[in-house]
Image (cartoon, rainbow, N blue to C red; front, side):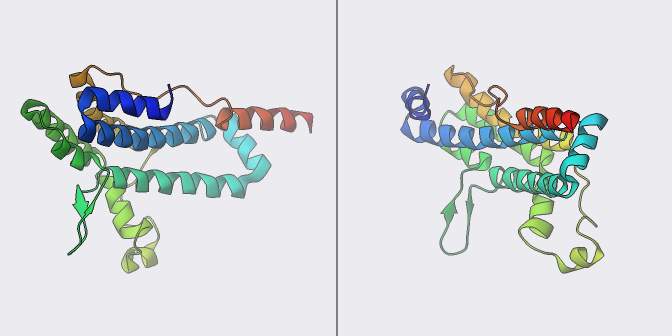
Length: 205
């Protein structure tokens, strides 16, 4: 099913406003999960694989891991931002906080709001990083060290935050009886393919 066909299906079941908003939000969450899956597959907790990456291009993979990490935190922060931001001119945001206002069924709206609150709690670390280091440079923290005073974030924390962000969408999907198109299959041309190629080249050297 193409992306347009999936959008049409959502709109047909949920109505135009909620269906379009849900579809766009689902796509954004799927993109976060896909990137996180690639991060996990490339930098797996496997001593032999890490040693391989270090032998091949240690600096490059160090930079790549840091960029993956920072991108994931920014993505989580975006998905959990307020429904609107700005001063005089308000800007509507594609975020789970806005989802609860697009839902019209009162019972579902209450359940979604609770799930959103839980997701905000599970992802607070990302907003701390975004506000003090990634989108802005807190001078005191910068001079003390880039991670000084900021939450220690592990890959598991990112996975838990993504799962919590998915919960409000799952509630909406379950309510309308549609499948959640979030995780999908592994990418055959992604990190695993790269690691396998590097293993063959490294073994032949």
